[in-house]
Image 1: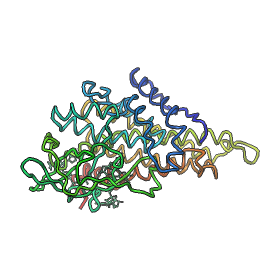
Image 2: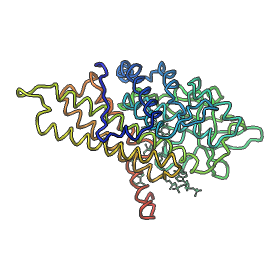
Image 3: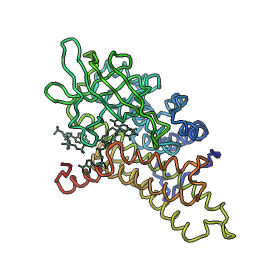
Image 4: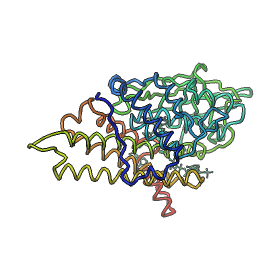
Length: 392
Ligand code: TGC
Ligand code: FAD
């Protein structure tokens, strides 16, 4: 892969709206991605492996639990800083951002929000430092968009819970030390359980042959009569609202992350278009390529403003699930369209691993599907504005 020459577009001077802390956090993440992700990521994507060597660096830039209080090892930052970190990491690769999203919003968030003090103290500092890696098990083979139908169950055996079932498409599962797993009790009520690697009957087979998110490890979680200690249940919130609350936080991070992928594709295409000479002039001087580039920067700018305003609402505790869905849906679609257009600007070079665009494009096929598909987010907006949920 070529040297990382990335320069972030900021067409509407959105930097003026950021605090000094936001810029410091963002720039530290940006420099780390240039130094530690860009030089190795193509090779890991080609061999379909997660680069475990970057776990320590992710922890150092505050990517594990950015908004978790410092007393539990988190970075104690606000929601805009969290978004900016996700943006910079996804500028490098969506799979790396996935690992950070899962660790922060789908593992640390539920333990912090729904767990008790003993659980917080036991798990959060180790998750923040990367000593423990976590995963989140909601999706099942027969229940993706409709997790309320989940079949994974646990039974109260007196001194422990007995867990049976299976989860599919789980980011980080092949190497995770712990899994936050959503399962129904005998009354059909959903609870979160912390399952630890090494518990008898718990296995995590890897899912192979993905064409997307290849630098992220994806797998299953299989529970065959797993004895889960009673102290591992999360009692702070029950019902489907508990995992959906975690998704609000992760989807918010993706709304920012997708901007990073789009900025990288735009920046690469702009530089290439200025350098590539055809018919005796740079292709950037042709109207057709200018149309592509001008539309890209317009869409990136709109997405940046959407994410920034959502961040302000989130900081004030006022961001709704439907507002988050709108931003996740819009920004991921924006990024995938930009990746497709940017790939064309590079002609044949666009399909090679010399440039990051094709990898972003393929990654974004997962991003537009996980954390609620493009269709589901449209239906969330539809239900919010009409009052009629049309899921069934
Ligand atoms: P519905 O009847 O709407 O709600 C059930 C209960 O939940 C409450 N609720 C929420 N609570 C907190 N936060 C939210 N965002 C909430 N949304 C809903 C709701 O009030 C209700 O509470 P109660 O007390 O009345 O029971 O539920 P539904 O079954 O109709 O489903 C609605 C729907 C389709 C929107 C939801 O199921 C959904 O979002 N489906 C998509 C599934 C999804 O996003 N899965 C993601 C899996 S994790 C993942 O993909 C990680 S990728 C990680 C990575 O690598 O980055
Ligand atoms: P389905 O729900 O079967 O949907 C198939 C199609 O039907 C989609 O186009 C969908 O939009 C459409 N559809 C569904 N319902 C409706 C409806 N009511 N109206 C109209 N259209 C509808 N899950 C986790 O729990 N943890 C993870 O860490 C995780 N990581 C993932 C990593 C990757 C790489 C991928 C690809 C997925 C991951 N997922 C994870 C799972 C992800 O959340 C699901 O794939 C997603 O929620 C969709 O579920 P599904 O694949 O079963 O598709």
